[in-house]
Image (cartoon, rainbow, N blue to C red; front, side, top):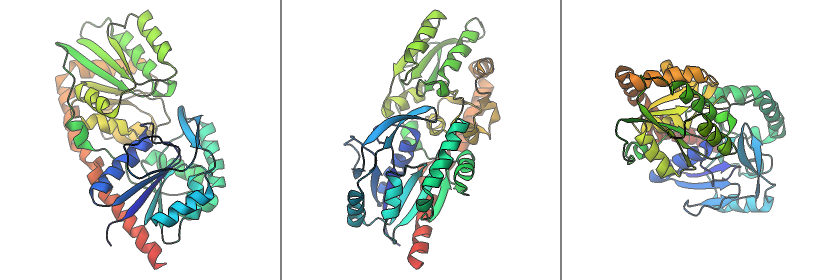
Length: 379
């Protein structure tokens, strides 16, 4: 079986660099490097730097699972049919959950010769999100029956698939292009200063406030070296977090970098001594933890939500209780003051990361693609 024509299907836009977008773009780039023909069938996208992007609908911004995202308006069925007839995809790889207005239509319109693979990505942040996705699973019941293989990026996402859609899936993890982060150019270090980096939207669920509270606890600790903390991200809590930083005397330590592009993100991770991800929940995995590990410089610390535990469970000492600033302060103190603990954590990260490299996971995914396609062609 030769090279494949693969269409990644995503209801959201590619204009934002969120986890699911990172997943399909990292895989898509690697697949293209292997000689496969890769397309993206997505909601409204304005980016011009990605080949073969097909904007299939207008989108509106909504609040979902503790984040802002875009969801599609009804796609034109004739446009969908014309694209599928023209491109004749071997594989459509759909990101789940999906809308009845776009991905659902694409799945039901796909030729019988096209194999359809789905990947579940989320873990719910609340019972309301779980209930909404049960309804969504019911609305999409007909298209769900068309899938040839269903995957999840983590055990947390697999549980979500089982609870909300009544589907058992196999786990194929998220991916990272390790060389990209490993080869990033760090920013110039500050003499006798340790650097902590936070990356994430400035919304309650991502936990930046918890990091600031932990820094306040450490402020009077004479054992702690001089610190600078880089907060990378934007969001509705921007003004609140800046006001907290100023009112608690942390403004000389904390720098708000705002939204950062992918290159700058890699450079900050390469500069960091510790990368902290205090998300309170709603994480199915945590690609950003892998990206930080790939930079091969910071110790990665994560809150013990279901998704981050998926990544850090083999090294539980790098987890801390979610929503607990005091526990985070203890963990920061440990890795800021113990060279032995830092060395052990970095050594584990270097042994652990290769299993998530896109070249490793990508080969497994292509095998699943070919298996699904053979099954469909023989039926």
